[in-house]
Image (cartoon, rainbow, N blue to C red; front, side, top):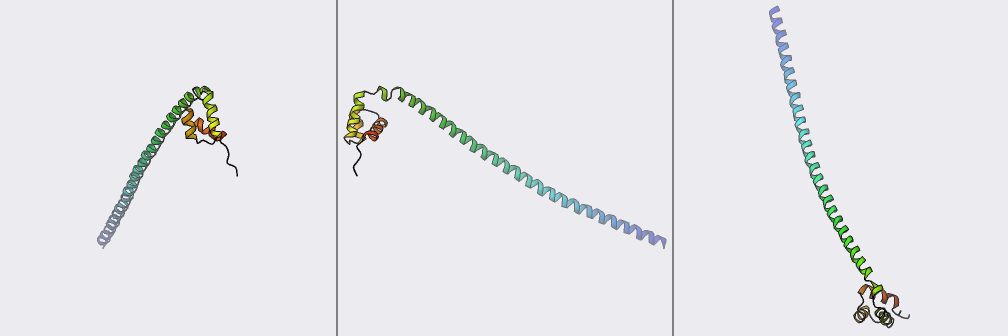
Length: 137
């Protein structure tokens, strides 16, 4: 009988051992599945982060190009204004300015004033706005 008792004890120990191995194997599979899931999510997040970095870089690059273009345009405008100021109204013939004032007071449109005086349109607009006769109410 002690042989059967020892055999039963050994079989019980073997069953517990096998169950333990089975439990460990199932836990290992669960951890491996979780690891794979997290690894996949991390890879997707890395790809998404990379895509966002590229789009942000593109936007920043486009904005830098736009700003650079705006700065160049402003520099060009400043040079043009400097040239206009140097050759501006102070160098215009006083007779042309006086004629423009007279024409504006008589009610001539800016196109006619510019054509008869040869003054630049911006100066003609200024003169006609300043000296044009106001309609009576």
